Length: 339
Ligand code: PEP
Ligand code: MN
Image 1 (cartoon, helix red, strand yellow):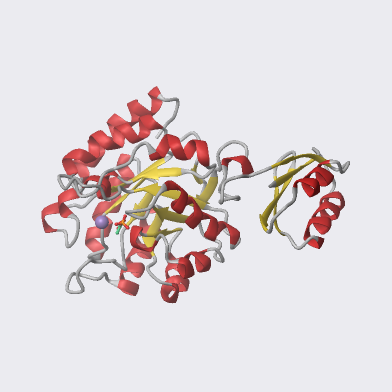
Image 2 (cartoon, rainbow, N blue to C red; image 1 turned 90 degrees about the horizontal axis):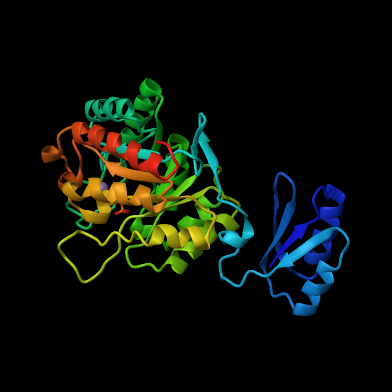
């Protein structure tokens, strides 16, 4: 349940109610809104009579039960959508649709510089590129690791673009978080609970990709792991799920966008590149994602897709990406947003 304090309740009043709840052995998360403080009960069972007694307190406006197993991620926990600053005034969850673009993997400094300049000129505000690559085959390119992170840092300095890159294990988290503005958790790690707990402790926003076989509830529970650890800056990224169809690499579940908007306050990003596996489908699905209410897009762009070490077939050329950005501006404005 959540306890909504009276508007303007003083910190001592909030503390008094929190002490009372903690005295019952409950675990709390307190969030201070502009007008009201909300106390979330995130651990322990609350009897109906207890909830009624708390609601009767003078300092309390109301008590709202949260029936979903995820609490902090629930829409009920926070009115309106979450919006947060990723750094340098770049925001997610606001009026603007945030476009993240770049190659699947960091391959060289020149490749990243070329891509970064092009996607920045076209309107992207975050640069992506994997330095640690989760590959199905142990014989495939595994990423440039620290050298790749160094390249990202240099390109960040040169262009001012923020960086998102994947962390694959708790072991490398500190290093990745030092370089990344947004730390990405890939589909294969969505239920790596140790990793989720660890990213719950960092101060950087986390882009949490949907597990390829995960339900929305399992995905939101993964977000809850991070949030209950203390990190509220979680961005959900729909990247396609496994279905019986093999024509596309995955089945991009765009129903997830409006569904998540009902279930959670967290921002939602769509990745049509991994979602389809085919660059020709990236444009139509990007347009559809923005129309469906996505807060952002993650799009793979490579200066020479035919030479890419990974995911070339789903990567746009910089020219195609620039064309798509022009189309997206029109779609975004039709749904009351900007790019
Ligand atoms: C990626 O974005 O580079 C990636 C590996 O994606 P996913 O985890 O969705 O497969
Ligand atoms: Mn990829």
